Image (cartoon, rainbow, N blue to C red; front, side, top):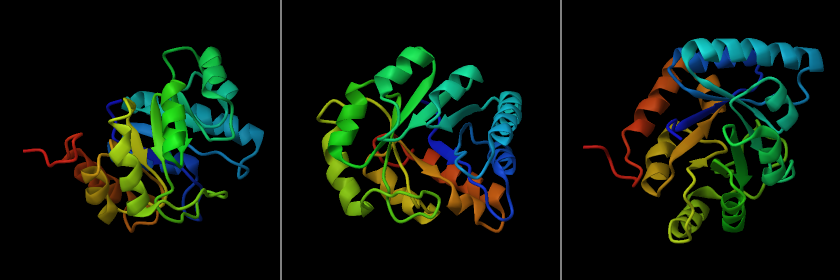
Amino acid sequence: MADRIIFITHKTEEFNHLDCVQIALDAGLKLIQLRLKSDVSNQEKVETIEKARVRCRVFGASLTIDDDVRTAKRMHLSGVHLGKNDMPIADARIILGENVLIGATANTLSDVLKASRNGANYIGLGPFRHTTTKEKLEPILGLKGYKNIMSSVASLGVKQPIYAIGGIELDDVESLMKIGFYGVAVSSAILSAPNPVVAARQFKRVVEQYKLSGSLEE
């Protein structure tokens, strides 16, 4: 994994999913996750994915989707993100092959270890705080919960990049990177900003100034 920000789309009063994709691309973000839930019809879903895929290809970005392994396979997407109640990682890997990204949701250290053992390419750990973009939230972890989990993962052999997810704001990034996160997943903090492209660039700049150890780049 080279991309340290995962941008997650969601429909707002101002932006549809394709608008969200274009914001991320204009800001130079390279890993975009379409979160197409019940807010779109099947036809709109297919059309949105195809248009987003073309745009991402032009910008050299990777496009993934929530949950839907078979759609990711059929539409030749870069990857899929699986929640804890979605298809098992091993089954998804059989369908998708070795060259497609599989992300996994985690809320506990046990979840992280399970996702790691089962072959996820990356892990989204959260939620950090309450977020309105996800309907069913696991227990909020906060910085204390994150520290407890992140202090153990390296010693337990977890090699996959771990992203903080769930209500992440720009002011949170420094603290999160210092405790060992590889990167962050962001949605509302960018889309609700006065200038979303500028906000996305700010996230990118702050995240990329940290080494993987959590210390500042010299």
